[in-house]
Structures are given as C-alpha cells and as structure tokens.
Image 1: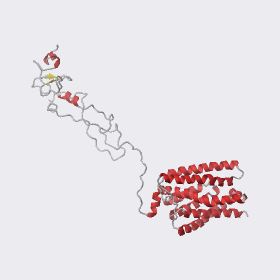
Image 2: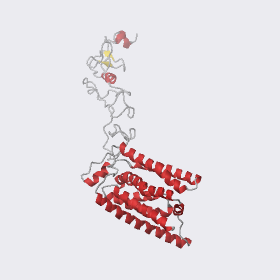
Image 3: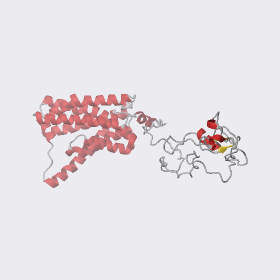
Length: 383
C-alpha cells in the first residue's frame, strides 16, 4: 500500500492522518483525493456522492453537457453555463494550474453583426456561434393570386387565372399532332387540301374543344372566363364588321407589299398553291371548305387564341405586348410563309377587338367575315 493509499484510508479514499494541505486552500488539511485528477481537497471543496470524491473542477466537468463542436448539431448550439457551486473555482489562488485540457469551455462571444446580405455564411465559415438565418433556400412557392381588382373591366381578366405554361403545352400538342396528320395526308392522298380541311373538322376542332374545357375547369372557371358571353349585341356586331374591314385592309396591304417585293426580285409574282387547288375542287368539296373556314375556324380558333391564350399572356406581359404576341403566334402557327405577315396583322386586330369588347363574339364575327371575304376572292379570282 502506497503512502497516498494510507493517507486516504485505503480504497475508499476517506481522509486519514498525515493528509496534505488542500489544493485550493493550502492552510486547510485535505479530507480526500479527487478520484479523477488526484488533487487533495478539503471538506469545503469536496464534491460528490457517497464514496465518490471530486474536486470542484472535475465535478463541473462531469456535470456539464457534452462538448458540442460547431457544425455537429443544428443551430442554435447549446451554450454552456458553468454552475455556481461554491467559491472554490472563483477564489482559486494564482498558482493553481489551468483547467484540464479536456474541460468544457463557454463558447466565444457573439461575433459582430454581418452586413445585410443573403444568405449569411454557412456553418463552419464564420466564427461561432453563427448568426441565425432562414432555412437554406426554401422551396419556391407559386406566386400568390393577386388581389381582386376594383375595376369591373379588369375583373374578367383576373378571373381567367390559368397559367401560360398550361396553354403553351396545349398549343404545342394540338398543332404538333395536326401538322403531323397534315404531312401524312399530303403524302398519301391526291387531294391533300380537301382532306386537310376534313381533318380540321374531325380532329383539330375536338382537340381545341377539349383543351378549352379542361384547362379552365382545373381552375374552377367556365365559359364566362373564356369570353363566351353575349355582351352588348349592337356593339358586338359593330366591332365585328369594323374589325373585319380593318383586318382585310391590313392583310391585303401586307400581301401586296410582299407580292411587289417578290416580283421585283424574281421577276414574277408568288404562286399560292392552295388557291389553285381550291379552284379545282368540286361543288360539294368547296361547300365543305367554306363551312370549315367560315363557321368552324372562327369559333374554335378564337376560343383557343383569344379566349384561352390571350388572358394567360395578358397576365404575364400586360395588354399591349399581349396583343402583339398573340397576333404573332397566331400568324406563325398557320404555317403559311407567303401569308404569314398578313395573318399576324389579322391576329393583332382580333386580339385588340377582344381586349376592347366584353365578348368573344366580336372577334369571332370579324374572323368569320374576313375568312368569307378571302375565300370568295380566291374562288372568283380564277374565273
């Protein structure tokens, strides 16, 4: 048995004769030894329960929570506050050794505020404790619905709240499938123009009807949001006739300008194959073409381009740019290079009519009168 073991009274570490002075109070006789660091401690400095004797520092170390290193736990990290269990640690003499190397220390003070920027430094790139900031890049949420406008004229556009992406997908699907079918008919039939109009009635119009029913229905909207309302009949008729005359003027003005440029460059005018094929058709086929062009096309194209597409475009870019873009896309999707500029101008006129009227019937009437005029001119030009 060593001298230390004899001093503490054997294995239980109790005090005995010939004990050294207390580590923290040298003028007092030690009563036990700390079972962790071996320091001699008096009765006032002793911490522990039963046969377990600890000095104040080892007692604080055992009672403290485990050390949390920056970056190993979610912020905010627990800040260690040493318990005040007696005067011994604060009254330690100047010659006492420092804390044990593995003791738990309080975290460093809070750093100066960061400049207002987002995001602040990530954990591990700045002094601890890191400034609190929102969850890293939360998932983007769709833009909230803007408040309902007070103006009655703007409410009809506000209620048409379907997205532009939905309409774009519908346009790509409808015109993509229809043009694939047109190419097949061009290769496999002797009269592709007639069968193209027939497929327009049997295939293209049902696709438009389904899209214009499904997309508003997903948003709880109906035919009023598509512009299918009567409005003011007299003003609708006036807008229809005025719009048709304006569209004819713009369309044929652009066509004659292109015809003149082509003639000056090539020495001859461009040939419109559709016009020649239309003049070669029989009476029943011409009647079907007129029914499709004058009745079906104005109704279904206006519902698609003005009723469904224009409100979504208007919500994104505003009325002026929406009128221009709607006409541009309307002309481009007809895939007629010779008449593209004319069709773009016609689309702009029809979109402007819908913007200024309370009903989709005004651009429908203008579109129908314009198509009737064009097809009659095409039929009579060959006679």
